[in-house]
Image 1: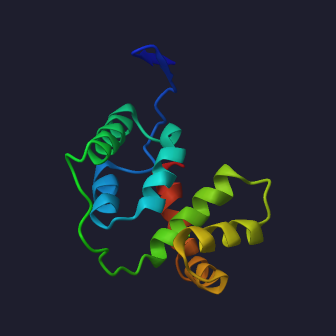
Image 2 (image 1 turned 135 degrees about the vertical axis):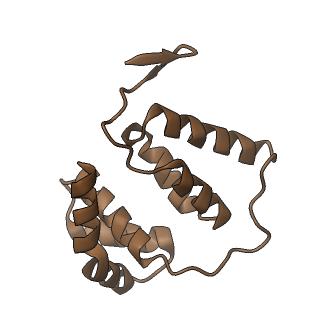
Length: 134
């Protein structure tokens, strides 16, 4: 493990689970829950992406960067499916129903919406993650 300013950093994964562009998009969309998800999964990102995440959070907290005045309308069905995949891989001991309930609460949607997103995009997301080697 590397060390940065006395903080032990986990080794870089072979491929980052999310990118700098994903972080910037989440900030532009004011998706605080997704940003929190990135923080929780920081060990699944490369050092460069973790540094960008830290810089982005610092800029938000010091108000160098501000969220938009309004939250843009979005249909993030694939994003919900991606988070479902993450939950399933990061917490395999939990039942899928528990993951669905957590995601519904996180995104402010119904459980049936989460199931629908997983049904619609689950296979595609699993394929993408497999090609990334995750």
